[in-house]
Image (cartoon, rainbow, N blue to C red):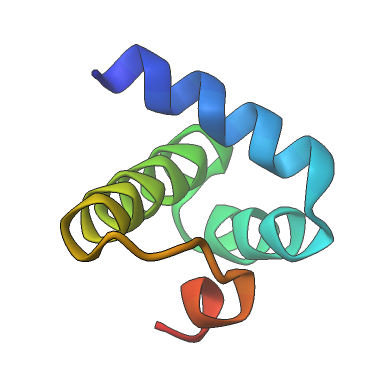
Length: 65
């Protein structure tokens, strides 16, 4: 599943300014590759929660936690 979330992370960053800022913030501390992995992992946890709760994706909630 990891390659799929890596691709999803790249696509998410293309569409979301908040995702770009999040990766930039994490990149200052961890480096760009690790920062993208962190966002991918966060995205994976969000997908799991969305499927489990049968909810919809909320970008504001996603970046507040």
